[in-house]
Image (cartoon, rainbow, N blue to C red; front, side):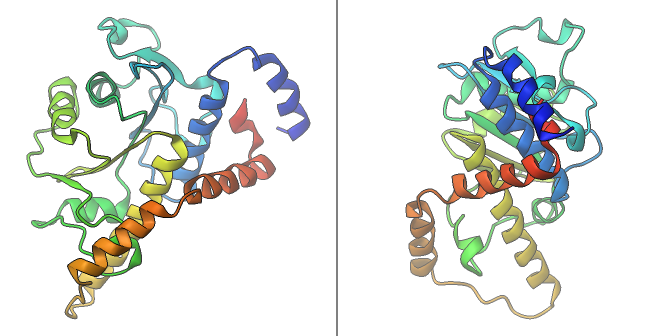
Length: 255
């Protein structure tokens, strides 16, 4: 679809108060595909659009990340227990996990759950700790919850357990499963997901080398993590560039 057609379409959605949220989330789906952080038509991203966080957008059941458009995102309410009886109900595991998180974790405005290769490999090790071996991995030093009690697919009971375990944290390594990232915005959540997968790749490859792993000192790792936290604006700049690329190459994500 040409950018001119997208602009014409945009005129029709100006009245949608959630439109910008839809565009941001659609961008995250497209880039998760481009970066090979998708899996079949599974995995789920969601974004709260209400003050209390209970109403949220989520991907439609069975739609491939590479094809998701802003208008296709489902709008559901975490407190509506009739959601799964609707004709356009989300995937049951999407509802189980994301419904629980948006119901119990108000800080989880954007929730990205995926099974990217290296993060999932790390989650499959007996010790899933993200060791601080470089600048990227130090970003997550002492800032990750590890779930060592995987109990099957993320239907409602498992979703409730995960929400309780996450607490007020932002990142959870879902042992034997994948990765979960929550943040106040899509840009921040996607930036964390991107850097976590990069860090996991470095760590897994370091393990695979068979050579001793060189750890940063606790002092340096904590210092670096705090420097990341003080590096304001990076996530939004990153995400704005991702949107600019899609606007040139796949502008239909906005429709």
